[in-house]
Image (cartoon, rainbow, N blue to C red; front, top):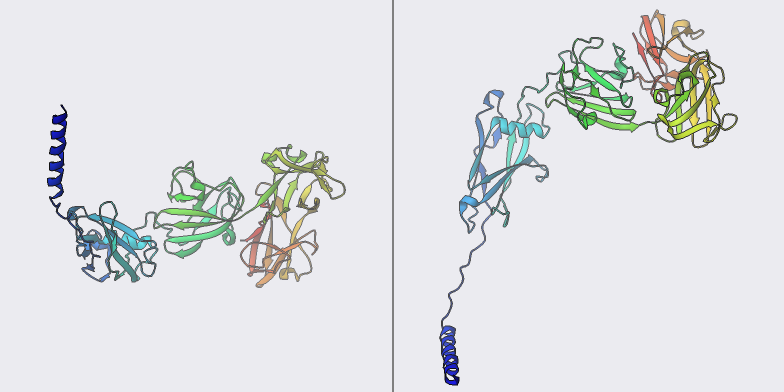
Length: 458
């Protein structure tokens, strides 16, 4: 047995010696590829709607000569507005091919997506990114510059032939009253396909867009106002069945309407903090109580509340439309307290201007009646206005012999008056005189949207 093991050991040694003498061949070496070189069939594109389905431009590139099957090589075509270093590029992936072609519609959709105006030539950059199928070993081609002009395509939603657009609804400053105050509820026409406006929006309300002020026959609306997020924007259409849902919080919002894309967007500019004035006059129900607003959300609130005659005239402020928030009651003369009893409207029934400051816990309530004074009376006497609880507005009629000016004032006194410093239909306390043309006019004063007061001249 010892001899057998010795023999086997010798045999293994000889075999190992022979194996060590056989040289293994060098492994193959594969060089890196090369950056592709991009070219195009044209450097300028100005298609028309009739070209929509036709091939309009072809991009071709050289092979990067990867050490792999060329049919698996991936190419990404990137197109972007010139000078952006492809930060907002639109991409197309091509596999195993050394060219790709765009129809006029495909390229036009890209240009319109960049926000390019119709009929204007723009500089556009194009490049190729090559790689293996797994994205390894990427190479960038040269950047190719082309000029491209987008053509007009039919808008998804037909824009108003009137050239005007108005906001109406419970979310708007004027409610569902129609015609609407044109200065404060009319959109600005940006171009034939785009309208925009910044409006006061009452939280939780709804609205429509009207192409003709005062006409309910046609409107822009949405198909389904229960879609999540629709209050911030989405699809809309002509004569659809449901109202736009407004945002939850009251405040100023910019609404942009894009008829080309059939989209609208709602962007908050400023949210208003609210306090609800719940009392005996309205059944002690914060959910249905009028509110005073803090436009700067700084704890300083203001607003107008109409209190009918009768009852106890007791009330409290509450920070939310129920009794579960912070409630403010009587803390002494013109003072608030979170543990005090009921407050009292000092003059019984009336149309009150209410101010409250939860920082220093002060408040005031002043009963008001409203009138107009101006050049049509020689600034020497007032023309009374009448309050309508249905529309929550004051109105009066003036006859003006020549173009002139006027202001609104409370209780026939200059201590509280409103003008229009921006000539935009909104009111400013102590603001500039309001201009009025010759003729007979019905004037409407609306103070019921706390923190946002406006007027209308008809």
